[in-house]
Image (spheres, rainbow, N blue to C red):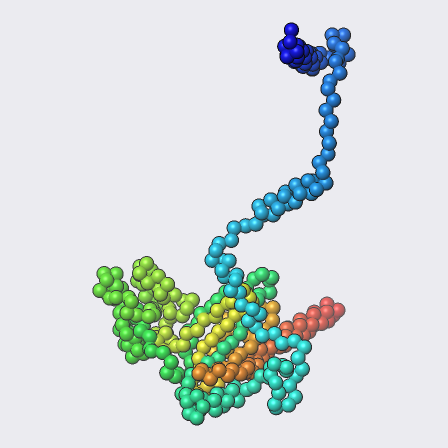
Length: 384
């Protein structure tokens, strides 16, 4: 027999021996699992092969832990649209509202503005400065519009609650050339109210017949900017809700009432303005509206300025502080702007509220005195 055949036979015998041993071990495990503990049927166990297990290296453990943490962080990140990412890239630097802290008060007439607190001036001085700047020898715009830029505090008393944007239309006491006269359509039932509306400047007046003409398409609604209605015409106007939509007359915006000439003048010649809230500073609101021209007398400019300020103040809600924080007066093309004092124009409302509260206190005191007198008289009667 050659050496190669001998080696081959030995290898086959060893493999058969190992296979038989593995089968015996599996049978022993099966029997041990089926038989109860302490049974006499247990077969003596053959010692199993020892398996050595070693712990992973420290570096491997740290790397796996880091991979798990990264996977968790990636799962927590929410999807952000591409437009939102672009908007975040163009976030303006610094707050919109100018906050002045740790600056000294102005003492002299000439000073560097960036090193001192801003000094508020009167409206008359601001108008005079703009008249000098827009003089024919400087910017050559003596009839330029003069505009007020009012900063608002939109923060409410409750946290994370802010005032919504509002839009107003106001009839100023002194009109000026700013925008073309708007077209108004009036719904009136009686002949007298129709004549009054026509004299006030309404472009179209009618009752139920006008409503039917609008429904049939004879009257184009795009030719009119506003629609007003008398209170006795609301039942006839309601079927036009689908056609007029937001332009439907309603009591909230003042387009429904009894005084037709007043409503027509308001919506045809009134000045429109609205507040805009900042997208990043939710407590910052801004109203920008012109209130006259530089050629107008100072009394008329001041009357228009006061009327707009009081109307803006009437839109305030329960804010944590003052509603109107600052007011600028500017007159393009001049780049100058001046901070104007507003306390004199809003102070009257505060005085009215304080006087009403004091009168309420006086009435309460009078009632208390009367009650005390009644109680004393009752006590005297009881003693008698």
